[in-house]
Length: 315
Length: 147
Image (cartoon, rainbow over all chains, first blue to last red; front, side):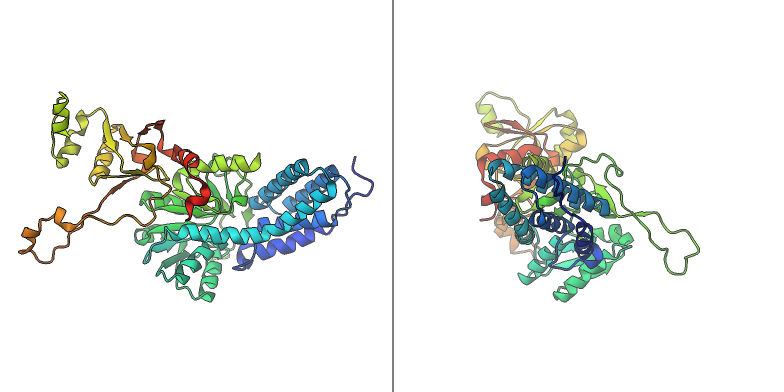
């Protein structure tokens, strides 16, 4: 039975939509925040505004807010951030019996989350630095703030890195990355998505972000990632994933359809509108056997190491 | 090695490095020593070991690497590798006087990827290369990863 003063959550969906749109591929600002951070920001607001006076009441409200956000998007990072935050709330409530002290701690942590994610990107860039040799050719895919940060850092350190960016149709998220690199004065070369195999010979390392990291160390990322991983593997090129730990999710996909699919409506190439548009969905799954290493703020991990760390986070 | 084995009354057959692949069909297992075990389970070993490991894989012969635990390192294969030995070890200086346009490389180590190693045998037990990260966790703090 919910309390008689159940919290009004009508503001949750609009706020989340606004923050989410800012975080999304085409709108991704270089120093902006990921959808997971958007979700945590909203949950922190919920705690701030909540009239609940017990932990249980607060947890129920948070659960309802999480459901509202998950109804707006199938983005896995959002669901995993909500679950991680809920775990954090439970752990904190067990450690801090006083409700108001507990609420304070939750607010502090929630407010720090955005800052922590920026710190995480910095630390990941530091770890990647040892693997990015001067004169190396890097292939990326889609827009990833973590990868962007690592590439800019390398250039600032004076390394001459050749960056190959596939367009990442249909949302052109490759161009979003390109624009940020241009603004930071970093040279790059745009390539066709279909040319990845053709050019893979030139490539020294592949650097990829992730929407979510699965329990087995595999990743969910923009459609095309699996393809690039297969090519990289076939030509023995290291395939490195850069992801913060809040992207670790309790999913264990066995096939390409084992995670929430997000369909996209795309238009055919201009001039061919009379023909059928391609079937499109947003993300694919790259299995762990194709991933060489994952770079996270807790260190460089082999895919096998991911599950240990994931379990530690969720218990 | 052959001399030392003979001194211990063990018979052995000495072959040329180039004959490894040809003779691999007659081999049941291959035992090597690792100079270092890297954090992703790959090995640094004497040059020529990678070729040996590939021959093993091609013939499905198990490759067992021996090493003390103290050789397990936090470093990864992608990071700046070691330098090399002097060129004189490969090409005696006396012969160089006549040579032009020849560059001599003498790498210190071969890097063997984890997928080619069947078993790592240490003084604390046998491990799969995919388990090295756990072993590392027991010997090093993750804060020491970046000094």
